[in-house]
Image (cartoon, rainbow, N blue to C red):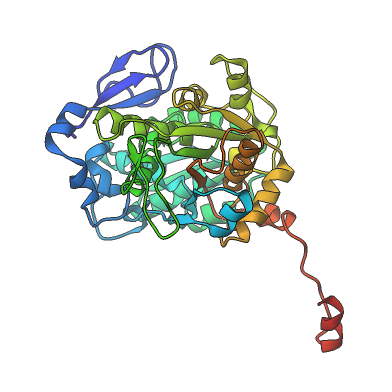
Length: 426
């Protein structure tokens, strides 16, 4: 691809050609950023060339991606992305805010944000001739890889902690992946998957390890950019509708659930790409939200440096439960470089957010509901006010974790099939 010119280490700034390295920096072990040829893209494309395309998936942004379009007939691999952004009147009223949107990623083929990364990684695997892909996952990344690999006719091996929610393990198995449950944590599964990839020559999709994962996740930033086209907000644009009014000189604020850090860093990368092309003037403020029981990045942000110390993760939000985040430094920078911050929320606050979103018609898994819990905390702390344009990212479907969902609601009563018993509970 003419627009993919190599890699740059996010830590030591070492550069590599497209074929010199596969995963991380050979010099310091840092995460690699994919480098695009912005000059080439600027000469060949304008924003209208992208926005005018009829394909709603991530592949509408092909000029901004470091892979070729997937070939073949229509499969789930071809329809990732293009997820809706909702206005939720009940939520706006509850929060007392004028501008609240929610981008709902559970509309992806495997019902999570992780499909974006897996679609790009599987496409890259096909380009380089890799026959078997492997990843570690608490469920969503594995399900996404299993789904995309199945759609492309590729083989996938998934290492998941034995504590992964049964619904997510079921997805892995139904999609035909080789599933191996590890008697340990996600971090244990991660280390084992890297060792297996080295030993057997498998192509490793691991989040924050394979640089193409962030390239898939950055497509959410492109979709947000498109959504913001009709009205200026500090260099971006915001959609006009019956329930929006002009907003002057205010940036959009994004609330992003954070575990290993790759989603927030990927979204940041997407906006940086758009700015490098001159297609936006300012990047939205990005606020990362972590569970209190898995807050390694938030702790480092509070300390003011980039030294991320592992924690012993314990949270109901399994998708963001990580001892040692693998993309922590770039995740820190996503908030710092955009004037954002990090917030932590408790498991009870996450469960309450599941219930609140459910009453608006959104069924979010715990990690996805974390974004709303973060917004509520930000409002309490004065980080946003009623005039602040806000977007929440729901990263996955509540059907992924029914056990957690049931903790968020009151149980349904059981009655005899008689009107008398019905009247007693009404």
